[in-house]
Amino acid sequence: MIEFTCTCERGLHRAPFEKAEISCGALEKLPEILHSFRKIYVVADQNTYAVCGKRVCELLRQSGQLSHFYILDGETVLPNAEALGKILLHAHDPNAKSDIFAYSPLPDLVLAVGSGTINDCCRLVSYRLGLPYAVCATAPSMDGYVSAGSPILHDGTKSTVQATTPKYLIADLDVVKDAPRDMLFAGLGDMFGKYTGLLDWELARDYTGEYYCEKIAADVLAATNACLENGNTIEARDAACIGNIMNGFLVTGLGMAYTGNSRPASGAEHIIAHAWELADVEQGKKPHLHGLEVCEATRLVAILYEKAANECGDEHLKKLADRYKPYFEKVERFCIDHRVPPVVTDRETVLSGMKRALTLRDRYTILFYLRDRGLYEDYCTYACDTLLSRL
Image (cartoon, rainbow, N blue to C red; front, top):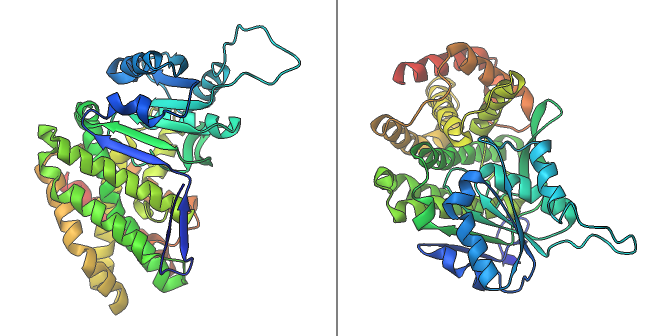
């Protein structure tokens, strides 16, 4: 358990998290980090097992801590009922004879080896079983490693199902730096979304009186700045750069745990990205990498803020937006210089996602600010056309 006193109105922040190991060679420390567990259930997919899952199992077998492992099959594993059911079923040998006088002989820890899907599924299964879990990261691709919710495909839609945070996060930089290029940029893109997310949080504080913690916001901003300032070395797969991204995920994940909501990590940009993901799910398509969609939506939201600051005649909004403007300009320059892959390029799709985002979540953001002033439709069209002209 992590806790600290704070000057914000809550006074105390707590998170059910024990330890993070983000370093080169972190994998070899796994048995020591998880020393208090003796029956560890390891879950991976075919790709993540090849990347480091096999080594994880070897280490835990040698230390006498491995209960068993399960590898999800298939080229594409989605966070859906099928994957959840398989992980749950194999939490113990499905062919074992039952003992009607005993409860299930479950493991004492679930260890997810992977990134988004594996982590999200194991988090929910562990929560439902009342077991602690840990995650061994394989890619710096999304900020949900230490989140308390799992985005799950269910009942024809996708929504975040509340669960818990992991007890341990292990990220071997020698492993995660070799993730595919798009996954590296997805991780950076997810971090870039903190700029618009934090600005939205300040907007909600000042215009609706929503709770806001300066300490948590400052920590997230500093972590995001580190990612942006050192991001130019990402294509060289620099371990320090990847370490900044993973540390950013840790800071934002803990921020969500401390506040009990996702304000420290997301705002309008995540809601727009979610709208695009939902549209793909409804059409039977595989959604794009979450972080790449967040990055693109961040650029859209930055355009909305810039236009509103210049045209709405609201001096307070302008003051807020002007503080973040240098960050927005650096993100835009970075995306152009590094050819960050755009994933939603159809004008109608971009626009429909922006408009649908307003209905997905009752959270005050720049989208609500513009709606309340009758500017939403025109501003969305402007932002869409402006961004597409840059892609």
